[in-house]
Length: 386
Ligand SMILES: Cc1cc2nc3c(=O)[nH]c(=O)nc-3n(C[C@H](O)[C@H](O)[C@H](O)COP(=O)(O)OP(=O)(O)OC[C@H]3O[C@@H](n4cnc5c(N)ncnc54)[C@H](O)[C@@H]3O)c2cc1C
Image (tube, rainbow, N blue to C red; front, top):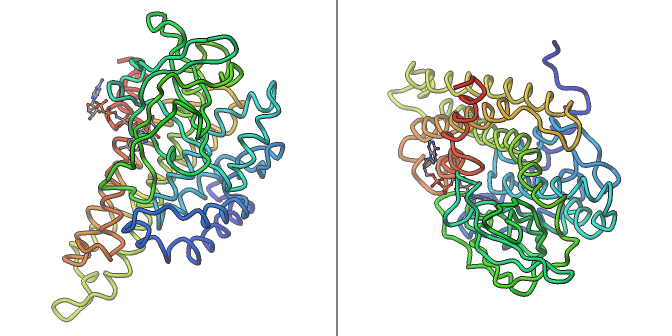
């Protein structure tokens, strides 16, 4: 067993870290305050090859491994979780489209995937609806074939990235007959008539990440926009989203967790109380030691899950059990770390200009989005035969 990252993984981590320190960190607080997305930053992520680290060269990616992509998301989320989430969702959407682009619809490479990899476009994925959150099987949005077009009707809630310019929306829908419940996936590019969206939600967390409610009113897309075969959508979502993306979500939480350690360690050494740095007190040391322990545990679990997921053939399901353990543990641990980070900063930790106050708000989504902590435990319990 080798616990060292490969030379390439270390190089990628250093490259992303340097970019994050120089380009991402300086504006993170401003973007959070103004709730603005920085398109220039996205373009630079594309130019550096970060978006396509784990996508094949045929679609403009670097063909790197899955763990490297996780390390990149972790480093970005160490200072700006909103950007980390934008990245993992856009890459995940491209991943859903990838098998078709490689096998039967080569035009999709240039049309959809390459622009995302270059940082010129975005991807969004939508399962959640006003009446279907954890219970994903209860979606009601449906599409009927009319000649050579699908006509889509319904709504989606809490969708990340969809409001960004030039975003391909990968929508989970039922086909033709709601009663048959043929869960499928359809592509809807921004600007398609009948596809509208509400203004951005005002959120407690991830403020510079775009989240919207979407509506489809007789929205027509070409028949070829169906991803995979009719009724195969659930498999696609399970493969790409649940068994892999949840590991990346865990990585972004791990990044925020590390950000909490970075800030708290620095502050514990600088801040004086009772004539000595607060870090000399055992209670403060205890908080930092627990933060470090849980980050190490999360990283071991994530590294194992990401390495094993990489060995699974593209298009097949990696371990749902491991992905859920990573998502659950890393996201819960990040919340505990953010709580301690604010505590260590005292009153300053409550102030907007202090990074850990943003980390505290941002961490909160992660026990809910991409499957709640309870749903992850349900998956683990099922694996245990309960
Ligand atoms: C900022 C943000 C961004 C998001 N981005 C996206 C996106 O891009 N695409 C997308 O499709 N969705 C997105 N979501 C939606 C997210 O995935 C859902 O909010 C989440 O799956 C939970 O669904 P819900 O909010 O309807 O809660 P509900 O399903 O109503 O759950 C409410 C509570 O009940 C619990 N619960 C429900 N069922 C069970 C059960 N069987 N056992 C135990 N407890 C249970 C839940 O764990 C939770 O605590 C986003 C959400 C947020 C907040």
